[in-house]
Length: 520
Image (tube, rainbow, N blue to C red; front, side, top):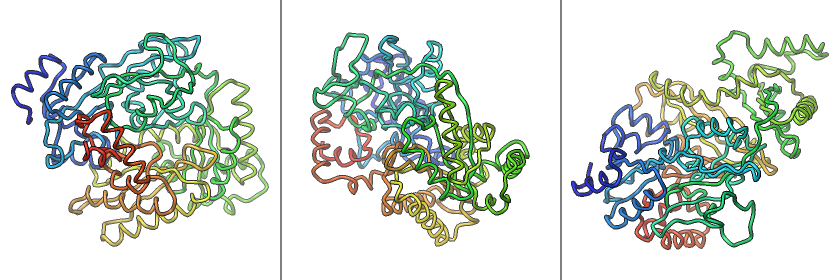
């Protein structure tokens, strides 16, 4: 650690046993969950890690830490669950950031401060981990409804800071729809609006710019989110799974687009797996019955009048996995609507078993990716938002670009490239790409993989996709950020950064703040 003895004494005085100089703790807090992070942790080739890790237990301690950092010329990087895949918690190199870097782990701030059942709100500290929040709310008969793939480890503060989205967005909304108000600590003080001491919050006000607007997507560059008031929903009366198989991707896509226009009939979660992704999921199933056998069984049961091989070919079939949540009547109506839409688009309902397996596969992917690394396979996911009119061409062009980039580098084997459509909107949908490649005998394997992903992002932007739908920008995508907004907007953002954090205490340099920080 580059912390001076006096700095170490000061931190120990502030946090006692909630302060660490351990190399393992510092390495873990200087990385996230991307393939590059895991690869670097395994190889021990991390260039810079935080000089210390601290665990504040209250907003008052956060205020003291921020003031102390400003007075002692420290750089602070907030840390939640460490599940980012954008290098957001990585330390800038010393040429860019020469100051000591302190990682601020918020997971000790994990309490539900109050729960107002009449207003359907709860005030929750930002360091609470998703799975713990789910458990606490379920005991009271409620859900927040926000269920990202990383819910096992990610935190409420991290969801706000990255402007996250969950699998059940169609029913409960994205994080900006769920969070009513936010408190966060900046070098200029605690930022909040509304009544400071009431156990409720206004659902909507017309009082100028709001604090959540500053916090959402700030990625640790304006301050430390300490708590948020969130909307609650009663636990669903019914929860069911379902699945629909389609002959071709285009059929499934039209099914998803039609569903997106039926606002009140969309199930909590609907995901369309392309053929590559669908076959991967089936290959990973523990039983031996394939989707083809299930289709044959369904055809026999329904006495279908068409011949299976003419419609559902292993090389072209795709599958939509579905999760319903709500009242019994609501779920029944949604299931009936799915059956009608499936029939209209040449689909066939396969039932709950495939649907549940597809839903659970989401949580397995990160574990499978890290396990596969042991066997010389690198894998990563990356997402975007795409308008309905551009989805087909964007997916095709991105896959083609990746195959070309893989081929010209003479890399071994054939890359796996899958895509699924997840969150649905009136205008388009979130696309999730999965890329895997063999790196046996490949020099600088992680860097080569990063080059492929960078090329894919270039193609996505060229084809009309966004820089991110919900992962955020971090340092991974900051080089693209200036292309996505006007110079005037970038200057305005820099002015906000200057006003809130003129000494750049929060110097993580993520997204557009990578440029804004240079002027502080």
